[in-house]
Image 1: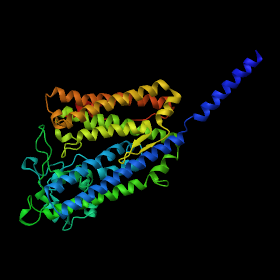
Image 2 (image 1 turned 60 degrees about the vertical axis):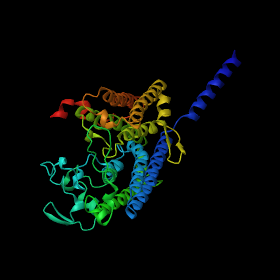
Image 3 (image 1 turned 90 degrees about the vertical axis):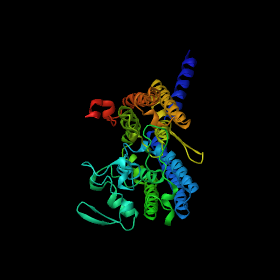
Image 4 (image 1 turned 60 degrees about the horizontal axis):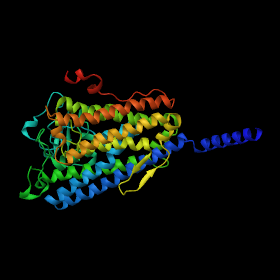
Length: 422
């Protein structure tokens, strides 16, 4: 009997020792999270530099082929960047910076020519049809601005969010997108913008006027995107401010991870980017509205959330960054909750994948937003439902990990739908 008790005690001690040895440390989870952030921004920078090369080639030798190559490079650049959006909420350094590179929607008339149906200046935005490409000088807040040369400094320091109006987006991915595709005037019919390559041509071949200045703008915006991504990438290096801030309070760092996951899933993606468009039946609510790339934008946003929970990220070169995960941390406290979250993440990605596949087969996101299109609404709302559902489980994870309460970002489209139409 004594020997049996001793053996049982020894086995129990070994089990406890093994459990302690394999316990996931919060610091290790945060280190892996920061490593994934670094890799995601590095990939965003790599693909932005490829985009810059394609833009340079287009402006050096304008042609239909070079315009198409620049568009393809823009689409490729969106893949890693969208996966980085999960780092925005909770990480102040990202949230304060993000408006420079991914702000939307935008009043594109600020930048270049638009169709007559677009209208002109409004009470909300007197610069909505400024068209800086066509105007080497203009008045802004009572001052005459010299825009004879379109530079990154002009875009960033003067035009972006001019007069404090968020719709005056002069920089980032969507300004570049507009310059490459032009307006999408097809409403809820299939098809993206179709700016002709001759909008960048020289001499008599130039269409749209001011082709040299349009090229200057595109060049400046692309250069600025690269420099902005260089800066953010550096913030996640070993001594970068983004990484360092996480470890000032390790428990708060774990909260940051969940804040990003929940706020992107709920208020931002399910609400502002998806449900709102369905309510308004408005293709202007597409995230990538000029290129008709919104299906990919939604998919890779969702994948970014999953990346953070699983603690893994597949880089653009196919290599894997992985390590101790939030999933493992939750599982140690509540294995059933971890399994629930994993299932819900998979369900959401399936729903977003169905939107992506349908769009790639020719049923574009514009069409899904059309009034009375029950099939499209069902596809989009499948993604919305999945995103909301997984957020409810993230809230339970906050409790399970004994973290301070987190207020995830909300959206009137989800929390107060009647306000959308007021």
